[in-house]
Every structure is written in C-alpha cells, then in structure tokens.
Image (cartoon, rainbow, N blue to C red; front, side, top):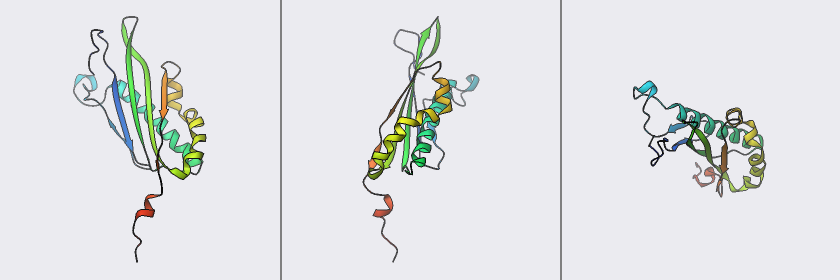
Length: 154
C-alpha cells in the first residue's frame, strides 16, 4: 500500500480479477507486504476486495446464465479506499467495476440481470452492512459469436 499524502492513511488499493467463464480468475494486486510481515501472500484488505469482486462477478454470471445468456468473459476491478476513524485506519468504501462481454443480441435481456444480480451475492450483501459498496457494470458487446468467424472444416 502507498501512504496517503500527509494524512498517514494508507492509500487506495486496486485489485483486478480477470476470468473467462469456467476458468478460475487470477487476482492481480499491489505487491503485498505479506502475511504476518513475511512477504508472502495477500493483505487482508486484498482478500476482502477479491471476495467482494469475485462474488459479484459470479452472481452476474449466474443471473446471465439463468436468462439463457452465455457471457464471453468478465473483468472485475475492485478499489478499496481506506479512511481514518477514531484514530484507526478502516475501510471507507469498496468500488467494484464489472465488465462482462456479451453478444449484442443478448444486450436487451441482460438488463434484467443488472437489476437483480447484486442480491445473489452473499459476500457483498453481508459486507455492505458495514462498508458502502458501489457497483458499476459496463457490458462490452460482440456483434456475432466467435464461432461464426472460424473457418469450417471441409
């Protein structure tokens, strides 16, 4: 983490979870100081951010599949912003930016998922009781399925 300017509050952390449907995502974050100061593993705030982002992304994928939409992939970026409360550093807010890739033909039906998916996420709904979580979803669309561009075997 980087120190905030003159405040003594550690700076914002950004984590990204890049995943294709059916594949495990990789968490990419700042170089961790390590578990118990040994330089290995993720910071606790990184783990919380990864849990919130992964749960929201999974919930969005679940909702899409229930609507018979098969996303081509999803990208999640999570920002954790600390703040000082009562002399201690606490997590002030969590911002999650989800970028699912869907077919243009699925875009209209995808709107229903945007209205519902957050309620499926156990982690975000639990954390939200004590930490504000802001979620932004910006779908990227592809004009036709990828298979349509592949040459057929003759």
